[in-house]
Image (cartoon, rainbow, N blue to C red):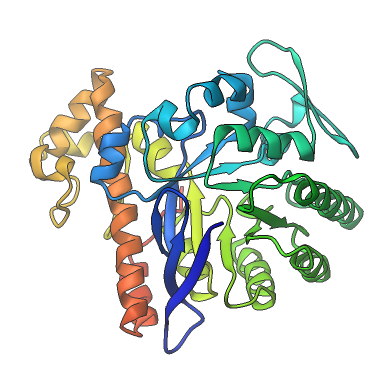
Length: 369
């Protein structure tokens, strides 16, 4: 059983810091989880993640179900051993793929029917099977199978998504073999649906609570409003996870509302395409103006990339199609995220989170295209 304890609360906001004890590692919160969809954080090794002080990662049930298969991973000692990662792993249930692969799925009350994006083969993922697969993977935290509709959603569609999510959550908790299962709250951008779904999921007394169906194109003001509704209802002693939240400005806003965990592909996806996150804002290192720039990505950064390589060199690597380019920027980006979260935790412990948010957040423009 995992344990979560709030250690510090900010003086002027709902931000809090704490410790999440999992079977494999103690995770300091608030924390950001890099995404290891297929058992690998793209462009980085487990040794590098440890060096960067990544404490918990997210893997995906749907993708690992298709390839190489959860039974094989179980036979190899579980996902931790299979990928040589000795810290915490949270596994998503596959519900997000019902959104991202919508052209390949059929939704039924019983579950989700997928046509594999790999070979077209048919697969059915029920709430019970999603939990069983995660048990076979041996993850520290499992997520229930959920369902949500794209933004903007019609009310009746969002209502149906809530009913399915709640019913699937009930079936999931009845089937769970371990105790480390998080429920997920849906409701699109409808206040009443969010409140209702939060209360119904809370009644099932999960180990923790994910806030889902956001960060999919809705205006930030609506995101913040829905997060606030959910966090106000989730008791202080429970861990709160805003799923898919990755832009630093959104992380700061959500920490202010009392969110503890975040995840997103942004650090490595953007790193592989040449966008670096810095405390001065974003930097497109592939840009021509950096062709002769001897400065590092960020002169104030102490990561391996910034201590050893210039913008000019990294730009050259991108132009030459070298794999190292994406690896170096991804490494820097993950370092940035770990530094951001460490700074957040420190400011909360000192009772001055809002000052920290104002100081660093004023330079954040990562949502801008």
